[in-house]
Every structure is written in structure tokens, then in C-alpha cells.
Amino acid sequence: MLNYFLLLTVSAVVLSLELSHVAGTQVPRPRGVPISKASLYSPERDFECLDGSRKILFHRVNDDYCDCGDGSDEPGTAACSNGHFYCQNAGFEAQYIPSSRVNDGVCDCCDTSDEYASGAKCLDNCHELGREARAEAEKAAEEAKAGNQIRLEMCAEGKKLKEERASKLAKLKGDYEEAKMIREEKENIKNQVEERERAALEKYKPVEPEPKEEPKEEAREIEAEEYFRMVDSDESGTVTVAEIQTRVTFDRDGNGVVTEEEAMYFLGNRDEVNLEEFLEKSWENIKPFLMRERGAFLPPSQPQDQGEDHPEDHPDDEDHDSDDHEDDLDHEDEAHHEEVEKDPEPEPEPEVKYDEETQALVNEANEARTHYQQAEKNVMDIGNEIRDLEAKVERDYGPDEVFATLDGQCFKLSDLEYVYSLCLYGKATQSAKSGGSEVSLGQWSDWTGVGPHKYTQMKFDRGHTCWNGPARTVTVNLRCGKENKLISASEPNRCEYAMIFTTPALCDPNAEAQSNHDEL
Ligand code: MAN
Image (cartoon, rainbow, N blue to C red):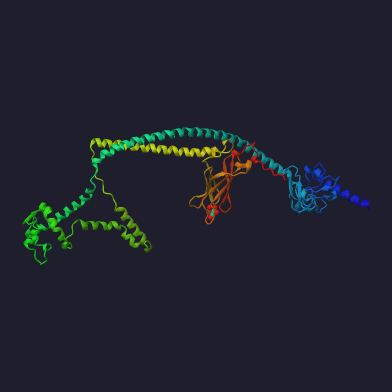
């Protein structure tokens, strides 16, 4: 009986170790255990769960019963839900799979070792996968090598740019100080000349009330003259008492008759007056009585003015009628606008002719003003240039200024629906192919990669706000490629965009940034 148990135990261990040999390894170890951990599974002693929680007899390893909390006693069976099965995958890459997948009828390991007792027909394709992977790795290596060459050029160019910008900035700062001095000088000259100009122009200053009076006076004269010609019915050049008596206007006492006396009152106690005398003496007396005659006589200027105003006020009258009524208000507004805009049309300034000396001063002042404006513009232009350059000098262009040459460069990518554009250190946009305006997906924010991978990711934020949602943002992941190229753009979450950008800047064989081997 004892012999029987001994035989069973020994054969179980042998089976377990032998099966490992089947997987093609030299170091004997239980199924599902990598060589690196073989020493932890020695058949010569009890097995200690890898988390140190307990010790079990060695024959309980891979006996299809889960003893350890961490599943480490069943690496080669599906007994523990949290165990790990190691496939050697000779010819390709070794791999861990959850031990729950062992013998589940699905081929997980390319060497078929996970399906040793399920009857699943698995094909060992590790060598084929290995070949493909090697070809891909070779291609990637070539790409990285070519990329590295370009990266070095980008660094050289970037450093050159940095130096150029720094020296340009230093020069501009000098120019700026000089420009400010020139501006001050020009301002002083301008002020001095303007002072002299002001003094010289003093004598040309118009007396304020006069220009307002003049047109009134003129209108008055026209009105009076018109009236004179009307009353002078025989066109003799004088207005007589008899002519005055024919007009009811001059019936001062309203008794229906214009007496001689009444008539003479209007003629300044004379029998007749010529135009000059009429203007000087009679018109003042006549004017107040004209109101009675208004219905029959209007000064010629009035009806003319009104007649002209009408068609201009409503130039669209005909269209207006045919328009929808809803629009009427708008039209009225427009008409009103036109009127408002037209009314204050400035009367042309009377051209003043200056004496020679004054004109020379005005010319000199104009020239001084122009020079000052030019100097002022120059100061502003240099100031703007300095600000732009300072922003670039302070910008993070990565190790050895490798990204500097990409500043301001834009890259486009089309998918079925949109054209995406990515301008490094600028902005990212989206334009629908069906039309409509460009949508900003974000402005350059910063490098956001973690730790040594800082320059593998950048962020754009403050894009156009989504309807009922957040402002759009873009996360751009960068990877090595011999071309600077936008290779993918997507929207994994609404209004959160993701892009992939390849760049030689990341083809640095010395940087660990690109290595992403995940060991368990
Ligand atoms: C537009 C595009 C889309 C986005 C929606 C959000 O259609 O910018 O990418 O998801 O707006 O409303």
C-alpha cells in the first residue's frame, strides 16, 4: 500500500517534470513556470507559495487544486483563478497568460502549450510569428536609423534657430531702445513745429458765429428779392404805393382796404423804392405781415427742398410694397438709418489760402507729424517682434531643441468625414468635408508625457466649446518615424480628440522613451 502511494507521488512529479521537457526546455520545472523561477519550484523540498503565505507538499503543485492565495501552486492548470501560465513560445516572444485559460479549448500560446490536454487542435506558429516580428522589427530599426539621422539634423537646425533667435532678440532690444529715442526726438520736433504752426494759424481762425449767420443772411436776401420781384408786377424795378395797395397783406387795420398811408408805411414813407432800398428799409416792415400771405406765397427754397427730400428718403418704396410685412419694420429702420447717416453731411470746409510763410510752416508740421507717426509705428513693430521672439525663446523644444523646427508647421489628415489639421505649438482644427466653418479643437498647451516619456505626448486645449459640453481638447501621442506626419485622428470620447504623430525627433537610439517592454 505504502509502495503504491510512493509510486503515485513519484510518477506525479516525474509526469510534471517530463511534461516540462515536452515544452522544449532544458531546466526541469513544473508546467507553466519560466526558467527564471525554476529554483522556486524544487521537487526536493516543500513548495512555499510565492506570496510566502504557506508551505505545501511539493506534489500539490499543479495537482489541479488551488492551495495558494496567489495561485502560484497551480501555474500549469486552471485551478486558480488568479494564477499565471508561462508559455515559452520558442521562436517568438515568451508570454504569460492567465492560468484560467489553460485547457479551455482556445489556443492562446503560439507554441500550443496552454492546450496540452483539451484536445484543441492548435498549430505551433511561433516561428512564423517570429519571422514576421523580426521583419517588422527590422523595418522599425531601419526607420529608427533613418529617423535618427533626421533627428540629428533637426537638433542641429533647432540649436541654430535658438542661437539665431537669441542674437536677433539681443539686436532687436538694441533697435527698440534706439527706436524709442528716435520717437522721442521726432515727438519733440513735432511739438515745436506744431507750436509755431498754432501761432501762425491763430490769425486764420474763423470768427465763430459768422459762418452760421452767413447762410441765414443770404437766405433772407433771396427771400426778400423774390418778394420784391413779385410785388413789382410791372417789372419797373421799383415797388410803388399803387403796387402795395393791390395786396391784402398790407391791410394793417384789417378793414378790407389798403390805404395810401398804410402802403407808405411799408415803403418807409416813400412813394416808391428800388430793390436796394426795399432790402434796406421795407423788408423789415413787410416780413411780419407775410404770414397772412403764406398760403398763396412760399419762398421758393422751401417747396423745392421738400420735393427733393422725398424720393431720397424712401428710395426703395416700390420694393417695399412687394416685401413681406414682417420685414417692414426693418425697412423703416434702414430708411431711418439712411436719413441719419445722410443728415450730418459736413459742409465742405472753405478752403483757406495761407500766406507763404504760414503754408511753409503747415507743410513743415505735416512732415513732422508723419515722421513722428513712422517712428511710433517702428517702436510698436519692433515691440511686437520682440514679444513673438521671446515667446519662442522660452518655449520647450525638447532635448537638444529637437522640436524647434516644427514650430509653426501644420500637418493635415483626412478621414471619411473630416479634415484634421495639427499645427505644432499652434492649434489643432477640424473641418467637416461637407462644409461649414473650421472648428478649433484646441490651442497648444504643453508636453504631457510622464517622466522620461515627457516628449511622447502633447496636449491642446481651449478649443471650441461643444454644445452643452466641454471645450474641445486634443491629446497627441508621438512616436518615432522617419517622417513628420499626422497618421491618425479620432474622437474616443465626445469632444476629446486623440491624434498620433510620427516624428524623427523621437528616433533616438539612446533614449529609453520608446521602449515599452512590459515585464510581469
Ligand atoms: C461636431 C464635431 C464632432 C463633435 C460634435 C459635438 O459635429 O466637432 O467631432 O463630436 O460636434 O457636438
